[in-house]
Length: 443
Image: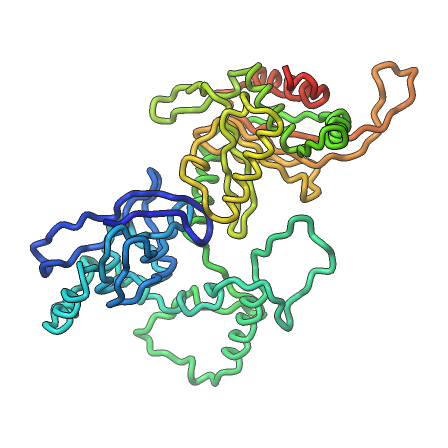
Protein backbone atom coordinates (compact mmCIF):
# COMPACT_ATOMS: atom_id res chain seq x y z
CA UNK A 1 0.00 0.00 0.00
CA UNK A 2 1.06 3.58 -0.63
CA UNK A 3 -0.01 6.83 0.83
CA UNK A 4 0.61 10.52 0.31
CA UNK A 5 1.91 12.66 3.10
CA UNK A 6 2.99 16.22 3.64
CA UNK A 7 5.33 17.43 0.91
CA UNK A 8 8.89 18.46 1.60
CA UNK A 9 8.90 20.98 -1.24
CA UNK A 10 6.35 23.53 -2.44
CA UNK A 11 3.07 23.65 -0.62
CA UNK A 12 1.36 21.43 1.16
CA UNK A 13 -0.49 18.67 2.53
CA UNK A 14 -0.64 15.40 4.37
CA UNK A 15 -2.92 13.01 2.56
CA UNK A 16 -3.55 9.30 2.72
CA UNK A 17 -4.98 8.25 -0.61
CA UNK A 18 -3.72 5.03 -2.16
CA UNK A 19 -2.28 5.40 -5.65
CA UNK A 20 -2.98 1.82 -6.67
CA UNK A 21 -3.94 -1.48 -5.13
CA UNK A 22 -1.62 -4.44 -5.10
CA UNK A 23 -3.58 -6.75 -7.34
CA UNK A 24 -2.34 -9.23 -9.91
CA UNK A 25 -2.57 -8.35 -13.59
CA UNK A 26 -2.72 -11.09 -16.17
CA UNK A 27 -0.39 -9.18 -18.50
CA UNK A 28 2.31 -8.76 -15.84
CA UNK A 29 4.64 -11.23 -14.15
CA UNK A 30 3.51 -12.37 -10.73
CA UNK A 31 4.46 -9.98 -7.94
CA UNK A 32 4.62 -6.91 -10.18
CA UNK A 33 2.40 -3.93 -9.36
CA UNK A 34 1.52 -1.02 -11.61
CA UNK A 35 1.92 2.48 -10.17
CA UNK A 36 -0.40 5.00 -11.84
CA UNK A 37 -1.01 8.73 -11.54
CA UNK A 38 -4.00 9.20 -9.21
CA UNK A 39 -6.53 12.03 -9.01
CA UNK A 40 -5.40 13.82 -5.88
CA UNK A 41 -8.08 16.50 -6.00
CA UNK A 42 -11.52 16.85 -7.59
CA UNK A 43 -10.13 19.23 -10.23
CA UNK A 44 -6.89 17.40 -11.01
CA UNK A 45 -6.62 16.24 -14.62
CA UNK A 46 -2.85 15.76 -14.83
CA UNK A 47 0.24 15.68 -12.64
CA UNK A 48 3.99 16.06 -12.97
CA UNK A 49 6.70 13.88 -11.47
CA UNK A 50 8.88 16.40 -9.67
CA UNK A 51 11.54 13.87 -8.59
CA UNK A 52 12.12 10.19 -7.96
CA UNK A 53 13.75 9.76 -4.56
CA UNK A 54 14.38 6.03 -5.02
CA UNK A 55 16.39 4.37 -7.77
CA UNK A 56 15.43 1.33 -9.79
CA UNK A 57 16.22 -1.80 -7.80
CA UNK A 58 16.23 0.09 -4.49
CA UNK A 59 14.15 -1.14 -1.58
CA UNK A 60 11.64 1.34 -0.19
CA UNK A 61 10.49 0.50 3.30
CA UNK A 62 7.28 1.69 4.92
CA UNK A 63 7.56 5.43 5.57
CA UNK A 64 10.11 6.09 2.81
CA UNK A 65 9.36 8.72 0.18
CA UNK A 66 9.23 7.11 -3.25
CA UNK A 67 8.74 10.21 -5.39
CA UNK A 68 7.28 13.72 -5.40
CA UNK A 69 4.24 14.55 -7.49
CA UNK A 70 3.24 18.07 -8.51
CA UNK A 71 -0.53 18.36 -8.56
CA UNK A 72 -2.82 21.25 -9.39
CA UNK A 73 -2.56 22.44 -5.79
CA UNK A 74 0.83 21.40 -4.45
CA UNK A 75 3.81 19.11 -4.67
CA UNK A 76 3.17 16.11 -2.45
CA UNK A 77 5.37 13.29 -1.23
CA UNK A 78 4.49 9.74 -2.25
CA UNK A 79 5.15 7.68 0.89
CA UNK A 80 5.32 3.92 1.13
CA UNK A 81 3.05 2.15 3.57
CA UNK A 82 4.50 -1.29 2.87
CA UNK A 83 7.93 -2.53 1.83
CA UNK A 84 8.46 -2.75 -1.94
CA UNK A 85 11.21 -2.52 -4.54
CA UNK A 86 11.04 0.09 -7.29
CA UNK A 87 11.43 -2.20 -10.29
CA UNK A 88 11.21 0.12 -13.28
CA UNK A 89 10.55 3.84 -13.76
CA UNK A 90 8.40 4.68 -16.76
CA UNK A 91 7.77 8.43 -16.38
CA UNK A 92 10.88 10.55 -15.93
CA UNK A 93 11.08 13.69 -13.71
CA UNK A 94 9.62 16.81 -15.24
CA UNK A 95 7.07 14.89 -17.30
CA UNK A 96 3.40 15.83 -17.05
CA UNK A 97 0.96 12.99 -17.60
CA UNK A 98 -2.80 12.53 -17.32
CA UNK A 99 -4.47 10.93 -14.33
CA UNK A 100 -4.39 7.15 -14.68
CA UNK A 101 -1.15 7.06 -16.67
CA UNK A 102 1.38 4.39 -15.73
CA UNK A 103 4.27 5.86 -13.71
CA UNK A 104 6.36 2.86 -12.68
CA UNK A 105 6.38 -0.78 -11.65
CA UNK A 106 7.12 -2.12 -8.17
CA UNK A 107 7.67 -5.64 -6.89
CA UNK A 108 7.14 -7.16 -3.49
CA UNK A 109 10.73 -7.90 -2.51
CA UNK A 110 14.34 -7.99 -3.64
CA UNK A 111 14.19 -11.70 -4.50
CA UNK A 112 11.38 -11.08 -6.96
CA UNK A 113 13.28 -8.17 -8.48
CA UNK A 114 16.43 -10.27 -8.91
CA UNK A 115 14.46 -13.11 -10.49
CA UNK A 116 12.76 -10.77 -12.95
CA UNK A 117 16.07 -9.15 -13.86
CA UNK A 118 17.73 -12.53 -14.40
CA UNK A 119 14.89 -13.87 -16.55
CA UNK A 120 14.74 -10.77 -18.70
CA UNK A 121 11.10 -10.09 -17.80
CA UNK A 122 12.10 -6.83 -16.14
CA UNK A 123 13.35 -5.41 -19.43
CA UNK A 124 10.05 -6.28 -21.06
CA UNK A 125 8.03 -4.06 -18.74
CA UNK A 126 6.88 -1.09 -20.82
CA UNK A 127 4.39 1.75 -20.62
CA UNK A 128 0.76 1.18 -21.54
CA UNK A 129 0.79 4.17 -23.90
CA UNK A 130 3.10 6.64 -25.55
CA UNK A 131 2.23 9.23 -22.91
CA UNK A 132 4.99 7.92 -20.67
CA UNK A 133 7.61 8.79 -23.25
CA UNK A 134 6.37 12.31 -23.85
CA UNK A 135 9.33 13.79 -22.03
CA UNK A 136 11.85 12.19 -24.40
CA UNK A 137 10.01 13.53 -27.43
CA UNK A 138 11.01 17.06 -26.48
CA UNK A 139 14.52 16.92 -25.01
CA UNK A 140 15.00 20.61 -25.52
CA UNK A 141 12.59 21.37 -22.71
CA UNK A 142 14.43 19.15 -20.26
CA UNK A 143 17.78 20.60 -21.28
CA UNK A 144 16.61 24.15 -20.79
CA UNK A 145 18.54 25.96 -18.06
CA UNK A 146 15.28 27.61 -17.07
CA UNK A 147 14.17 24.30 -15.60
CA UNK A 148 17.18 24.10 -13.31
CA UNK A 149 16.87 24.23 -9.54
CA UNK A 150 16.34 27.78 -8.20
CA UNK A 151 19.28 29.68 -6.82
CA UNK A 152 19.36 33.05 -5.15
CA UNK A 153 23.04 33.77 -5.78
CA UNK A 154 23.75 36.69 -8.11
CA UNK A 155 25.68 35.84 -11.24
CA UNK A 156 27.96 38.08 -13.34
CA UNK A 157 25.97 40.15 -15.79
CA UNK A 158 22.76 39.93 -13.80
CA UNK A 159 21.22 43.24 -12.80
CA UNK A 160 21.34 43.78 -9.06
CA UNK A 161 18.38 45.80 -7.70
CA UNK A 162 19.46 49.11 -6.19
CA UNK A 163 16.43 49.45 -3.95
CA UNK A 164 15.27 47.35 -1.04
CA UNK A 165 11.96 45.75 -1.98
CA UNK A 166 9.29 45.15 0.63
CA UNK A 167 8.65 41.43 0.92
CA UNK A 168 10.53 40.70 -2.31
CA UNK A 169 10.40 37.13 -3.58
CA UNK A 170 12.62 36.24 -6.52
CA UNK A 171 10.78 34.86 -9.55
CA UNK A 172 13.53 34.96 -12.18
CA UNK A 173 16.65 33.59 -10.53
CA UNK A 174 20.05 35.04 -11.23
CA UNK A 175 21.79 31.72 -11.83
CA UNK A 176 19.21 30.70 -14.43
CA UNK A 177 19.57 34.06 -16.12
CA UNK A 178 23.37 33.78 -16.24
CA UNK A 179 23.25 30.23 -17.58
CA UNK A 180 20.78 31.33 -20.24
CA UNK A 181 23.09 34.15 -21.32
CA UNK A 182 26.05 31.78 -21.57
CA UNK A 183 24.01 29.28 -23.56
CA UNK A 184 22.79 31.96 -25.93
CA UNK A 185 26.29 33.32 -26.49
CA UNK A 186 27.65 29.82 -27.11
CA UNK A 187 24.92 29.09 -29.61
CA UNK A 188 25.51 32.38 -31.42
CA UNK A 189 29.24 31.61 -31.67
CA UNK A 190 28.74 28.10 -33.04
CA UNK A 191 29.62 27.53 -36.72
CA UNK A 192 26.77 28.14 -39.08
CA UNK A 193 27.24 24.71 -40.59
CA UNK A 194 26.39 23.05 -37.31
CA UNK A 195 22.91 24.54 -37.43
CA UNK A 196 22.04 23.11 -40.84
CA UNK A 197 19.37 20.42 -40.73
CA UNK A 198 17.72 18.38 -43.42
CA UNK A 199 14.35 19.42 -44.80
CA UNK A 200 12.73 16.42 -43.12
CA UNK A 201 13.83 17.48 -39.62
CA UNK A 202 11.58 19.68 -37.52
CA UNK A 203 13.09 22.44 -35.42
CA UNK A 204 11.05 23.03 -32.23
CA UNK A 205 9.96 26.65 -31.97
CA UNK A 206 10.39 26.54 -28.19
CA UNK A 207 14.19 26.32 -28.56
CA UNK A 208 14.51 29.60 -30.42
CA UNK A 209 16.79 32.13 -28.72
CA UNK A 210 15.63 35.76 -28.50
CA UNK A 211 17.37 38.17 -30.83
CA UNK A 212 19.28 39.91 -28.05
CA UNK A 213 20.48 36.56 -26.68
CA UNK A 214 19.96 37.63 -23.08
CA UNK A 215 16.83 35.80 -22.01
CA UNK A 216 15.08 32.49 -22.33
CA UNK A 217 11.45 31.62 -21.67
CA UNK A 218 10.67 29.96 -18.33
CA UNK A 219 8.23 27.03 -18.43
CA UNK A 220 5.24 27.22 -16.10
CA UNK A 221 4.94 24.63 -13.37
CA UNK A 222 1.80 22.52 -13.38
CA UNK A 223 0.63 24.40 -10.28
CA UNK A 224 0.95 27.80 -11.96
CA UNK A 225 -0.81 26.51 -15.07
CA UNK A 226 -3.79 25.45 -12.95
CA UNK A 227 -3.78 28.76 -11.06
CA UNK A 228 -3.79 30.67 -14.34
CA UNK A 229 -6.60 28.48 -15.65
CA UNK A 230 -8.75 28.97 -12.56
CA UNK A 231 -8.18 32.72 -12.32
CA UNK A 232 -9.07 33.09 -15.98
CA UNK A 233 -12.18 30.97 -15.47
CA UNK A 234 -13.13 33.06 -12.44
CA UNK A 235 -12.85 36.34 -14.33
CA UNK A 236 -14.76 34.92 -17.30
CA UNK A 237 -17.57 33.07 -15.50
CA UNK A 238 -17.97 35.00 -12.24
CA UNK A 239 -19.56 38.48 -12.51
CA UNK A 240 -17.13 40.49 -10.39
CA UNK A 241 -18.41 43.59 -8.61
CA UNK A 242 -16.16 45.91 -6.64
CA UNK A 243 -16.69 48.15 -3.64
CA UNK A 244 -14.05 50.09 -1.72
CA UNK A 245 -13.89 51.99 1.56
CA UNK A 246 -11.31 53.77 3.75
CA UNK A 247 -11.07 52.96 7.45
CA UNK A 248 -9.33 54.95 10.17
CA UNK A 249 -7.10 52.58 12.13
CA UNK A 250 -5.64 54.93 14.74
CA UNK A 251 -7.89 53.47 17.46
CA UNK A 252 -6.63 49.98 16.64
CA UNK A 253 -3.00 51.11 16.76
CA UNK A 254 -3.56 52.72 20.17
CA UNK A 255 -5.35 49.62 21.48
CA UNK A 256 -2.50 47.39 20.24
CA UNK A 257 0.05 49.57 22.04
CA UNK A 258 -2.03 49.55 25.24
CA UNK A 259 -2.47 45.77 25.18
CA UNK A 260 1.24 45.25 24.76
CA UNK A 261 2.30 47.78 27.38
CA UNK A 262 -0.24 46.99 30.09
CA UNK A 263 -0.88 43.30 29.53
CA UNK A 264 2.06 42.02 27.52
CA UNK A 265 -0.30 40.87 24.75
CA UNK A 266 1.09 41.28 21.24
CA UNK A 267 -1.51 41.18 18.49
CA UNK A 268 -1.09 42.39 14.93
CA UNK A 269 -3.18 44.62 12.71
CA UNK A 270 -3.96 41.51 10.67
CA UNK A 271 -5.59 39.93 13.73
CA UNK A 272 -7.90 42.92 14.06
CA UNK A 273 -8.64 42.72 10.33
CA UNK A 274 -9.73 39.10 10.55
CA UNK A 275 -11.82 39.75 13.62
CA UNK A 276 -13.47 42.77 12.01
CA UNK A 277 -14.27 40.72 8.89
CA UNK A 278 -15.77 37.95 11.02
CA UNK A 279 -17.81 40.42 13.06
CA UNK A 280 -19.11 42.11 9.91
CA UNK A 281 -20.00 38.76 8.35
CA UNK A 282 -21.84 37.85 11.53
CA UNK A 283 -23.90 41.03 11.13
CA UNK A 284 -24.32 40.60 7.36
CA UNK A 285 -24.51 36.81 6.86
CA UNK A 286 -25.65 37.31 3.25
CA UNK A 287 -22.00 38.11 2.43
CA UNK A 288 -20.82 34.85 4.01
CA UNK A 289 -22.22 32.70 1.22
CA UNK A 290 -20.92 30.76 -1.76
CA UNK A 291 -22.14 29.83 -5.22
CA UNK A 292 -22.94 26.27 -6.28
CA UNK A 293 -22.25 26.18 -10.01
CA UNK A 294 -23.82 22.72 -10.38
CA UNK A 295 -27.24 23.78 -9.10
CA UNK A 296 -26.95 27.56 -9.69
CA UNK A 297 -27.89 28.25 -6.09
CA UNK A 298 -26.55 30.36 -3.24
CA UNK A 299 -25.02 28.30 -0.43
CA UNK A 300 -24.97 29.97 3.03
CA UNK A 301 -22.01 29.16 5.28
CA UNK A 302 -22.79 28.48 8.93
CA UNK A 303 -19.27 29.37 10.08
CA UNK A 304 -16.89 32.21 9.24
CA UNK A 305 -13.81 30.41 7.91
CA UNK A 306 -11.41 33.00 6.54
CA UNK A 307 -8.80 32.09 3.95
CA UNK A 308 -5.73 34.32 4.18
CA UNK A 309 -3.27 34.66 1.30
CA UNK A 310 0.26 33.81 2.48
CA UNK A 311 3.44 34.13 0.42
CA UNK A 312 5.72 31.10 0.30
CA UNK A 313 8.88 30.40 -1.67
CA UNK A 314 6.85 28.89 -4.49
CA UNK A 315 3.85 31.21 -4.56
CA UNK A 316 0.69 32.03 -2.68
CA UNK A 317 -1.32 29.63 -0.57
CA UNK A 318 -4.43 30.39 1.46
CA UNK A 319 -4.51 28.67 4.85
CA UNK A 320 -7.88 28.88 6.56
CA UNK A 321 -8.48 30.32 10.02
CA UNK A 322 -11.66 28.43 11.04
CA UNK A 323 -14.57 29.74 13.09
CA UNK A 324 -13.09 33.22 13.43
CA UNK A 325 -16.37 34.53 14.81
CA UNK A 326 -15.77 32.45 17.96
CA UNK A 327 -12.09 33.36 18.43
CA UNK A 328 -10.55 36.16 20.44
CA UNK A 329 -7.67 38.29 19.17
CA UNK A 330 -4.99 36.21 20.89
CA UNK A 331 -6.49 32.98 19.56
CA UNK A 332 -6.60 34.41 16.05
CA UNK A 333 -2.98 35.50 16.42
CA UNK A 334 -1.70 32.13 17.61
CA UNK A 335 -3.79 30.13 15.12
CA UNK A 336 -2.71 32.25 12.18
CA UNK A 337 0.96 32.19 13.16
CA UNK A 338 0.87 28.42 13.41
CA UNK A 339 -0.82 28.10 10.02
CA UNK A 340 1.68 30.44 8.37
CA UNK A 341 4.64 28.58 9.87
CA UNK A 342 3.32 25.22 8.68
CA UNK A 343 2.40 26.64 5.27
CA UNK A 344 5.97 27.84 4.73
CA UNK A 345 7.27 24.52 6.00
CA UNK A 346 4.90 22.69 3.62
CA UNK A 347 3.03 20.92 6.39
CA UNK A 348 -0.57 22.00 5.92
CA UNK A 349 -3.32 19.40 5.77
CA UNK A 350 -5.80 19.53 2.87
CA UNK A 351 -8.64 20.79 5.04
CA UNK A 352 -6.43 23.64 6.22
CA UNK A 353 -6.20 25.29 2.80
CA UNK A 354 -9.17 23.91 0.85
CA UNK A 355 -12.57 25.47 1.44
CA UNK A 356 -13.17 28.62 3.44
CA UNK A 357 -16.07 31.05 3.19
CA UNK A 358 -14.24 34.38 2.68
CA UNK A 359 -10.73 35.36 1.59
CA UNK A 360 -8.46 38.20 2.73
CA UNK A 361 -5.43 39.23 0.68
CA UNK A 362 -3.17 41.85 2.26
CA UNK A 363 -0.52 43.66 0.21
CA UNK A 364 -0.07 46.44 2.73
CA UNK A 365 3.33 45.06 3.65
CA UNK A 366 4.46 45.72 0.07
CA UNK A 367 3.50 49.41 0.27
CA UNK A 368 0.40 48.98 -1.92
CA UNK A 369 -2.32 51.55 -1.29
CA UNK A 370 -5.17 49.59 -2.90
CA UNK A 371 -5.81 46.84 -5.41
CA UNK A 372 -8.51 44.44 -6.56
CA UNK A 373 -8.34 40.67 -6.14
CA UNK A 374 -9.85 37.81 -8.13
CA UNK A 375 -12.58 35.74 -6.46
CA UNK A 376 -11.74 32.15 -5.61
CA UNK A 377 -14.88 30.11 -6.42
CA UNK A 378 -17.02 28.77 -4.89
CA UNK A 379 -16.45 31.62 -2.45
CA UNK A 380 -18.33 34.80 -3.29
CA UNK A 381 -16.04 37.44 -1.78
CA UNK A 382 -12.39 38.37 -1.44
CA UNK A 383 -11.12 41.45 0.36
CA UNK A 384 -8.00 43.25 -0.86
CA UNK A 385 -6.24 45.15 1.94
CA UNK A 386 -3.83 48.02 1.32
CA UNK A 387 -1.32 49.75 3.57
CA UNK A 388 -2.02 52.23 6.33
CA UNK A 389 -1.27 55.74 5.08
CA UNK A 390 -1.24 59.09 6.87
CA UNK A 391 -3.63 61.71 5.52
CA UNK A 392 -5.39 64.87 6.65
CA UNK A 393 -9.18 64.70 6.76
CA UNK A 394 -11.75 67.42 7.23
CA UNK A 395 -14.02 66.82 10.26
CA UNK A 396 -17.79 66.80 9.83
CA UNK A 397 -17.77 70.04 11.79
CA UNK A 398 -16.10 72.35 9.31
CA UNK A 399 -15.31 74.84 12.04
CA UNK A 400 -12.70 72.43 13.36
CA UNK A 401 -9.25 72.20 11.78
CA UNK A 402 -8.25 69.19 9.64
CA UNK A 403 -6.85 66.29 11.58
CA UNK A 404 -4.16 63.78 10.69
CA UNK A 405 -5.32 60.17 10.61
CA UNK A 406 -4.07 56.79 9.41
CA UNK A 407 -6.30 55.43 6.67
CA UNK A 408 -6.42 51.88 5.37
CA UNK A 409 -8.22 51.07 2.13
CA UNK A 410 -10.02 47.78 1.55
CA UNK A 411 -11.68 46.68 -1.68
CA UNK A 412 -14.15 43.81 -1.81
CA UNK A 413 -14.52 41.81 -5.00
CA UNK A 414 -17.87 40.02 -4.85
CA UNK A 415 -19.81 37.59 -6.99
CA UNK A 416 -22.75 39.72 -8.13
CA UNK A 417 -24.99 36.65 -8.27
CA UNK A 418 -24.55 36.18 -4.52
CA UNK A 419 -23.60 39.57 -3.08
CA UNK A 420 -25.27 42.55 -4.69
CA UNK A 421 -24.29 46.19 -4.21
CA UNK A 422 -26.54 46.66 -1.19
CA UNK A 423 -25.11 43.65 0.65
CA UNK A 424 -21.55 44.67 -0.21
CA UNK A 425 -22.24 48.17 1.06
CA UNK A 426 -23.75 46.87 4.30
CA UNK A 427 -20.80 44.56 4.86
CA UNK A 428 -18.23 47.32 4.30
CA UNK A 429 -20.19 49.71 6.51
CA UNK A 430 -20.13 47.17 9.34
CA UNK A 431 -16.45 46.36 8.72
CA UNK A 432 -15.53 50.05 8.88
CA UNK A 433 -17.43 50.46 12.15
CA UNK A 434 -15.53 47.60 13.79
CA UNK A 435 -12.17 48.83 12.50
CA UNK A 436 -12.73 52.36 13.77
CA UNK A 437 -14.26 51.26 17.09
CA UNK A 438 -12.34 48.05 17.91
CA UNK A 439 -13.94 47.79 21.36
CA UNK A 440 -17.08 46.60 19.57
CA UNK A 441 -15.26 43.44 18.51
CA UNK A 442 -15.28 42.33 22.12
CA UNK A 443 -19.08 42.24 22.23
